[in-house]
Structure formats: C-alpha cells, structure tokens
Length: 114
Length: 113
Picture 1 (cartoon, rainbow over the protein chains, first blue to last red):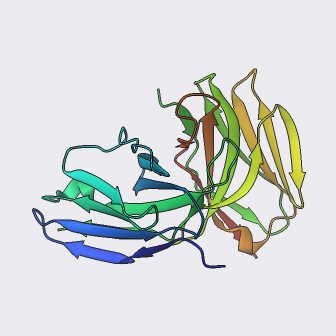
Picture 2: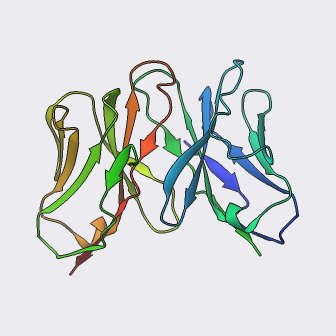
C-alpha cells in the first residue's frame, strides 16, 4: 500500500513568512509524529498525535510552531514568521501505535528560509 | 553530553568489507533500540529493532546491544554499494513518553565498488 506522503517536497520562503507543511499518514495508522532533521543535528522530535488524545507538543522549539491533525488522518505543521534557523528537513512518520510498533517515515519536506 | 552519541563519519569502505557502526547512550531508561537507513533525500527506513541485550541477525545485518555498557552496534557483512547511505541509531524508553525516538546524528557510509 501507499506509504507516508508529504508535501511539498521542497519549500523556499523568505524570512518572516508563514509556511504550512502537510503529511498524509498510512491509512489506519493512529499515531503520527513530526521530526526535524537539521544539518549536523540529527532527527529531533517535534510533536506526537495519537488518536483523539491531546498531542504531545513538548518538542516544538517555539510558539511559532504549531500542528494539527484533522479527522485523525492528515496533519499540517505550521511555522509562523519563519527564521533562517528553521531551515531543515521536516519529516513525518506514522505508526499503528503501541510500545514496539514501527514508525514509517515519509520523504520529508526540505524547507529553506532565505 | 547528548543522550545518544554517534560518530558521524564519513566512513568509506571497499565492496565486500565488514562495516561496524556504533552508538553510545547515557539514558539507562532506553530499552528499545533501532537502526534506520536513510538514502539521500529520502526518509529513514527501519533496518533492525531490538529490545534486549545480545545479538539479532537479519541477512547481512547484525544488531548488537550491550545495556551494561550502554553501547549498541550494527554490523554489515559483505557490504555492497547499495548499502551506501546514512545509518541512524534510535532509542526509546519503556515508560511514560515511550513513543519518542531519540536519534543519533547518523553515520554516512560509502561502499566503493
């Protein structure tokens, strides 16, 4: 079946603009995650959604970052007033949930803030 | 000190070599250990998943966990050019926010034909 998809694959924006990144998880996966991969920093957890539970937003780096998940499926990560340090690859993953479940990653959105 | 340390390399080996990739960690709450492979401009894909000390083998890949030393390894036998990628170790704990993966920075591997 189809894997996790993300759009756009690349996004170039100017400092101060808002951006929206989209994630379509694997059908039937109840858990959805956002990570950020910066040069030299590895993958950092941003936010976690599980079913109808309140999301774990503990990894969001500032209040300029927010995310929502509509209907338990598609998720949007929004970055307001982008800064150059926001330039990174934003990866989305989904899983069935559970302690030993596997997180399946999308291809990522490469964000460049000029 | 970061929770997970991984030598970023780069590591360059000839085809057929045995490759050893390693991570150390400081958080004793980590109980589940993973190795992901990430090709350029792609998302990570899971290679190995272990939750106990010892070895786990899958084809040319062997994952090794030593919880007493807080050290994990991935061995690749008979390495192929198609193994050229970045290898990421990842860990999670067994309680609380156990869904969070903590990653190493990744090791860039090149296998030369």
